[in-house]
Image (cartoon, rainbow, N blue to C red; front, top):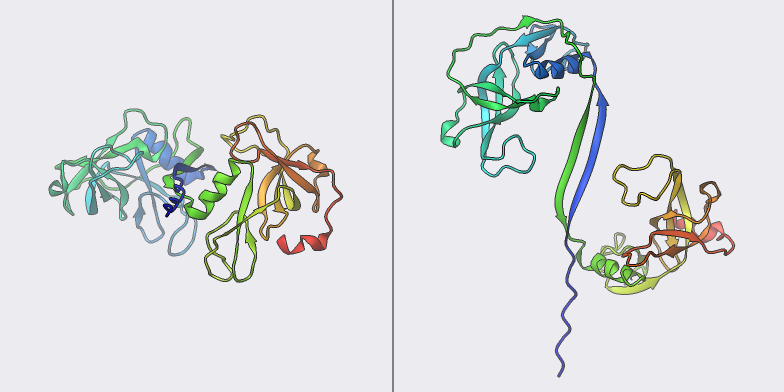
Length: 323
């Protein structure tokens, strides 16, 4: 009697999804962020007299443009709060703190930020706080390092401000980022392990018999599990493509020059097109129906790119259902 083989280890790896978004600022947001750099908090006054901080550019009730800037105080009142006992990376404070909504003196709306407090027992709705300014300020919301408790009566009122500062901030980069651990699961673990052996493996649905590459572990059409592995390719057909003229930031392969072509490729025997870069041919000669094959680099765990095989182009009817 032989022992059953143990299932392959499911892969896991850290994954970062990052998108630094660059945007220009209108006159209201420019004045607000530049003001923070100068330790001045600005809001806007709406047609009905309400002072909004942070400022908005259009009245939320009438949708009319708002341009009347006013200065409010650096002290305020906590309107509501929640304790954060385990701060995440890149949050305002590295030690436990409270998320608070603070209505600054002279404002009618509240601003969300962090409150530096020794514990949740030290925080309550209605407590008085003040801004702790960052030591180095660049014209961003983090010029407010956090709020801190401050025993003071409400005093400041909104006063008119022209919004004029030297060297105004006119644009910002908002760095959206998500860090997490990704596990591809059983089906894609087998797919990735096969790629390391320069093979492409999909899975066939036992009901409709479609072969999915990369495999998903279940058929999206029939809703049944797929366990029957099928090796496909290595050659395939370009079903559609795009010409890339802007190189992605932090691209892994610095040798790739723009423009280049990224394509959907239907590997022989597969019923789903995967994507890959096309090389070995001028970008303006890539076409639908082009027959291609993978090019592997030494030690690579996936094809570096696909190149023409030299075969005649595939007939449109042979791949039209995979576009």
